[in-house]
Image (cartoon, rainbow, N blue to C red):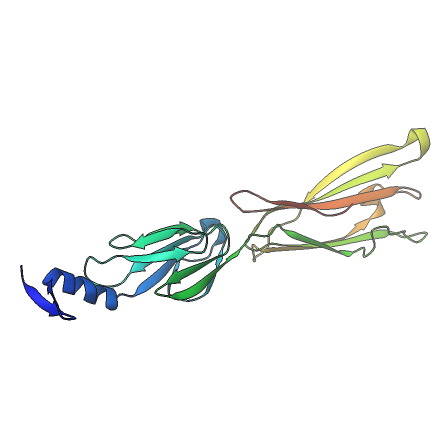
Length: 220
C-alpha cells in the first residue's frame, strides 16, 4: 500500500484520492417532472429551482473516485449521493444544503382548472322582451391540459304544477393549445326550446389531466 504525507500525517494513497475526490466533487440535479405535465426532464447545477409537484429530484455526483457526499434536507433527511444518485419526490417545497450552502426547491402545485363565463356577465340575466337569441361564451384554462369540459343546461318550461325541466349537455371542443378551451355560441330561442317566461340555467364542468384528476364546476 503506497503511503504519502498529508498535513503532517502519513496516509494511504486511497485516502489521498478520496480527499481529492471530495474536494473536486460537483453535484448536479436531474429533474424529471410527471409525464402528464408534458414538461421535459432537465439537468441543473446546484441552485434554487422551481419544479412541478411530484417531480423526481436526483442529486448526482460528478467526480471520479468512491467518495460520497451528503445532501441535507430541511425536514431532517440526509441523502447520500455516491455511485448512485440520491433521489427524492418533490411533494412539497423544501430547502436543501450541501457543503454549507443552502438552496431552495420550490414545488409548484398542479392547480384545478379555472373557468370564466364572459357572456352573460351577470349570474342572473333577464332577456329583453322579444329577444330572439341567447349568447353564451365561456373559457377554461389549466396548468397543463384540459382533459374534458362540458356545458350543462337545464331549461325550466312553464310554471306552477305544469313546470317541466329538460337537460342538455354540450362538450366544449379541444383546441390547438391543450391548456385552454374557448367556446361561444348564439343560441336561438327555437334551438333552446325557450318561450316567454321560461328560465335557463347552466354551468360548466372542467376536468384536468392530472394523475389524480381535479374537477372544477362554475356557479350556476
